[in-house]
Image 1 (spheres, rainbow, N blue to C red):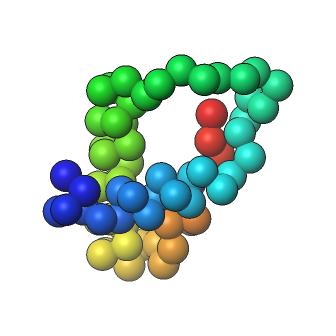
Image 2: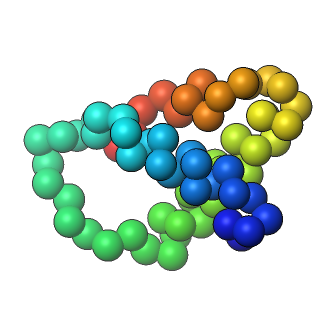
Length: 66
């Protein structure tokens, strides 16, 4: 999936720079398959929006990180 949509990796990297919404809770849980599928879903959506010129940067697509 990352080979076909490299924007997924870019989106995750950008999201990792955002402050966490629930920063008072320490979460050391490993991501699940569902978590990765959600990342893939939003990565593909970001790819389509960028390609369609609806957004010009991934940061416009991410409002917050939970």
